[in-house]
Image (tube, rainbow, N blue to C red; front, side, top):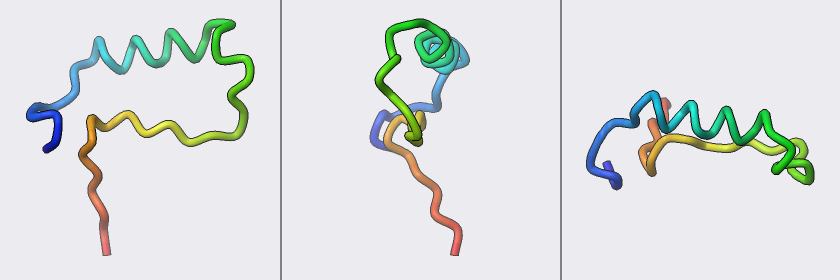
Length: 43
């Protein structure tokens, strides 16, 4: 794990709160990975 730990619920809440605000008005049709650098690829 690049971040060295699992994510915390507060970190997810911060992203959700930001997305629900007016700040990301120019972000459309994007996938935002919130995984701390850890990706699980299933084959």
